[in-house]
Image (cartoon, rainbow, N blue to C red; front, top):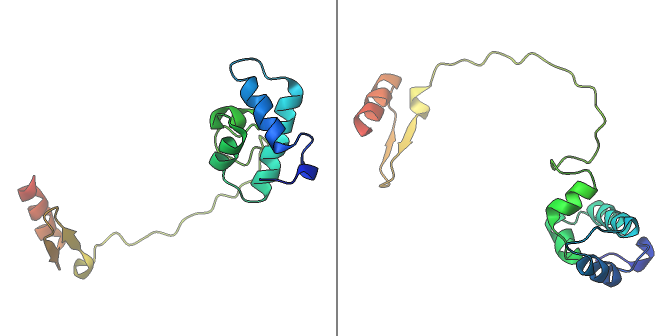
Length: 124
């Protein structure tokens, strides 16, 4: 997947070592090599799942090693945010835009809100 020059351990050797240590405590150098592989592959746009398959590792384990359990960017640093007030959206329903689709394929258009409520009550 990645060139050997980008890794301390070639991909095949890394995969074999990780698989051989499955169920045991992984040595620090293997963890470091797996994280380096992960970072390089993610930088190339390769999916997390494909990386875990290439290494023969559980995706959750790899994500834990990279600090990426929640699927975030992997950083725990806080970033500044700005809260902005959302504009008020008109809550009236344009009856010409209401479309009802039933599971049987029936399509009903143009109901006003009162007729729509009546239909929903009837269908329950």
